[in-house]
Image (cartoon, rainbow, N blue to C red; front, top):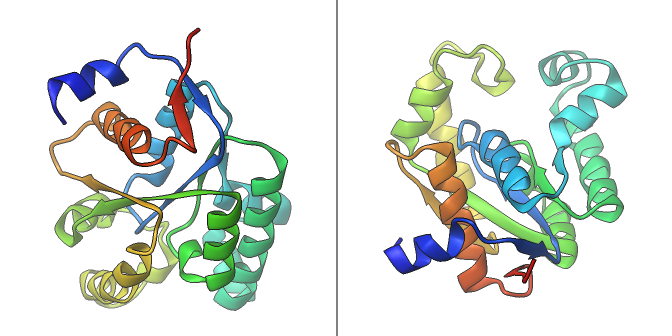
Length: 195
């Protein structure tokens, strides 16, 4: 990002015109960057996984174990649709949410998808010590992550906006990059406002 772009991001006030939906792999930073972005833009932060957990009174891994992934995905689609209708803000979704054609269509129609595009090595560094990822509860989680990554990247590439995540970037630097990208590529979603 150039210094001019950086200066236009820092200290500005913004007006969000559509919900920004964070998509990408587990470990890409959807929740951390999403929360910080919501704070920066002074809008609500919504998390589809947290909403599902609250409604079910169970964690995502518990839902996967008890009811299976197809059940979870149906609930996820319902929750994302409701959140897109209820309030404009920043919506963090689970890693598998954007794979469903219905979710992609809903997000594109009522918001904008932002793919936090992180490489496989960076993702592995972030998720390898966590046991909260139900899809990685396999004998070889690194190979499983690589397989999931290869399957999902072509679908994440369909997102409205792609923002590259790099290992040495802080959450705030990622937020700067997301804001600058939205301002440059999607003025129908985000604009600076005269506060």
